[in-house]
Image 1 (tube, helix red, strand yellow):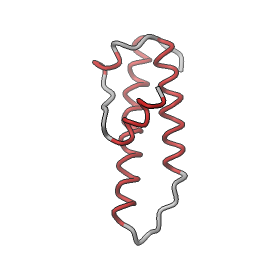
Image 2: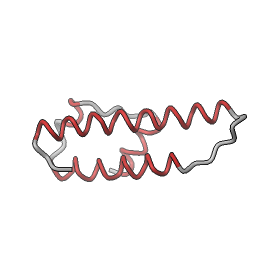
Image 3: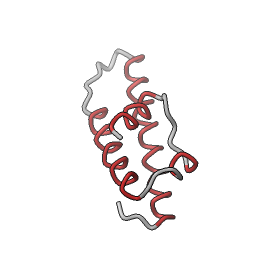
Length: 83
């Protein structure tokens, strides 16, 4: 699951309801934890304000992770999984 969270952040994998259909309740909980950890790690990266390319890459990674967490939460709520 750690690798899945890293792939989501890098843009190699997309989390959507079709992908999450294959996951059971425990896998959803673990993925949620790893996505949060990846998001916190991305937030802690210090980027110089004059380096716009690196700033953009960091923001895109955060956006991908955030969107995946939102989709995961909604899917968990539909399946009645407590996160």
